[in-house]
Length: 395
Image (cartoon, rainbow, N blue to C red; front, side, top):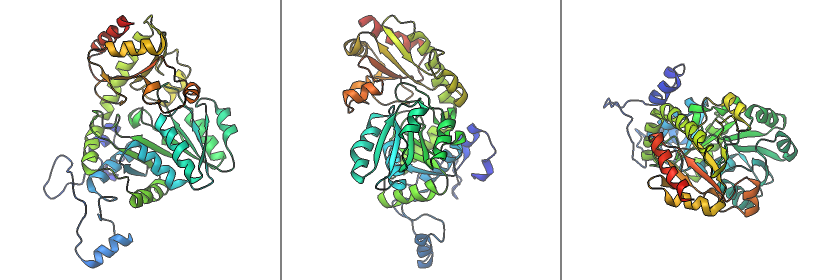
């Protein structure tokens, strides 16, 4: 099925790849909610456990529904293999645990999800893996931070929540020069808007919880890359350690992929209009959205992405007090730290997504007390503006 559609368009592959119909002839992909699978003989069981014969064994690491999702996302990202995980954070953890060992070093952008930084600093450090942080957009910072023991360059682009854009081609060249792997979190854009592997990345990670689901229903993650790094090493970690995606969640994400192309275009169009409107508000000192000509990496974003995504950050002149006033005056926009939902959400990063960072680290990452982040949903854009106007009126 994957080979049959390899030359088809993005939207066709998002709908068709990976489904192998059962004898029942179902149109929609089935869910296989089973813990284990049976064998025709002792010989077949032995062959499957030994890896001599392909087939299902145990749902911790082989499940047909999960495999359909993996094959579909892999082809959309342009990768050879995909490993589905229980969450976006477990996708990052699985990648690091599979590919690093004691004494290795990671260079990471400062502009990453707060919990990712906690993972690196509090937990990977226990295994003797060190991390240094650099400014995402400063290539010289990346060059200076690399050591002989550096094994991975890690980043998000666009970044959370500032929408900073990394030059993936330049970082790929730098990684190759230093025998490092470039690992890119593609959560904000998804393969519908950006394909890091085609720009030189070695591995892409996802929080499928966000835009891949698209309706805030399930938790999941994924790692995409080549057959050796991902198909063997990351898969080997998942098989042993078990941060596994459930068949039901995989089925939900399969359905999400079917509409991903349409949704990302709609999110991007509304976000651009909202960002332009926010720039005109007297209470706003700055808007962070790569689709705006005022954004410092606007030209680079146009080069790497087909659109600019649905996430906007903006600063309120009155700081935290006025930012909270705006949030509390809203009537129906969802106050939640999740993003990528069909419902528009708003959060205060300094006290939520990045609240576990020190004040100094937040400042280095550009997270101010007056900053708000909006994940622009699929509602009528004029209605989103009207609810935000209530918030601005309360300041």
